[in-house]
Image 1 (cartoon, rainbow, N blue to C red):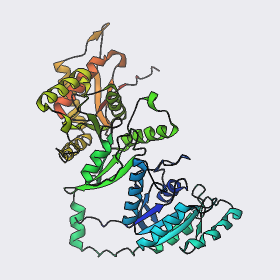
Image 2 (image 1 turned 180 degrees about the vertical axis):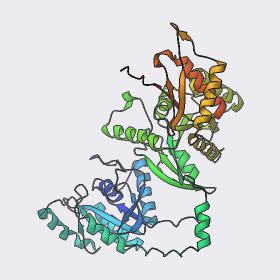
Image 3 (image 1 turned 120 degrees about the vertical axis):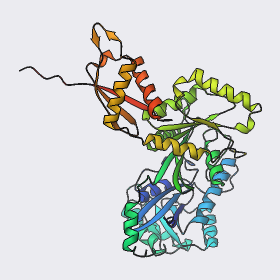
Image 4 (image 1 turned 135 degrees about the vertical axis):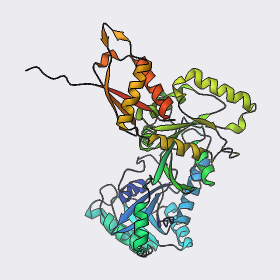
Length: 460
């Protein structure tokens, strides 16, 4: 099957706090980017797909352009903006309509002229008829008609989108498939289109460096400063015939370490990424071993029932590698024995060691997360478990599993209909889970066992 053509890109640019992320969310139709009054919240490029009047396109949110950036992170933010402009087919130049034009606005105008691309001028924060008159002040920028909008209230967005799609290329008319091709497509087995992979972990373990190394470009900003990544950034990637969506996330830190309001947003987005993902890559520093915060991160993943792979980063910094491998295994066995069913590997973002081996682990674990056991087979297996190890008798009462079924995946859940829930000790439940894993695998997949008591018939 031919790879689908990439949609044209619309880039939203402007100085900080003019409402770029709010407009991005409005066009994308979802709360995809963090919106906050503090400047510099958006750092990395955030992409989404949008549609207007039957025309599909991609839209990218960018960080704010500032004058003479000195801070290294701010400099990298500006590089991200310029890459988005270079990639874009149409540029939306967003201005704050309640303020006078600044020197940064003038400088950005000159730069956009040099690119020679269609520029749509949007004047934001004009949310009443009196303020709307301010748009006429911006004709002097030389980009034609300024579109008065309010991203927050959704005013003027339709007219803005009408203008944007005028500058997009006409969609190519696909040739009609022959009858034979249609039948062939119908017979193809339907596979999940995209595997969503959340890259998670505590701050500074190399999450963004991993994504950049995979893409072979600085797609997300990397800096030694903890908290550089603030939002969860979606990145599409195609590898060996398969499509992936990597979600680079902010570092998950202890609650005591979350001091600023925007950090609550970042952590919230990271947790949402875990819920969205098919597989979580839990990044941990190989030079440190597993820490209490690493265990908390794993707990988040288990709680939401998302499949996972443990990835030890910074392997290039380890000197005695064979001894360190043994030490890491012992570390996991001692500090986190419940992770014995989770596969793990070591990588180096710097030297790219085993970098693309990660995809084998992702594919295997994603397949395990989709696995279903037939009800008849499952109940036969439950009989085998009981024959090997029957539950303990409590006060003359015997715990009995009447019936079992797998109710779903993501999370992988089994429901056991029993005579009395209180008769099932947690150790016996752990025994059932271990036997399920021995028999069926479920490598990297959290398993949930739910007990339900059979309804007793009421005596008339």
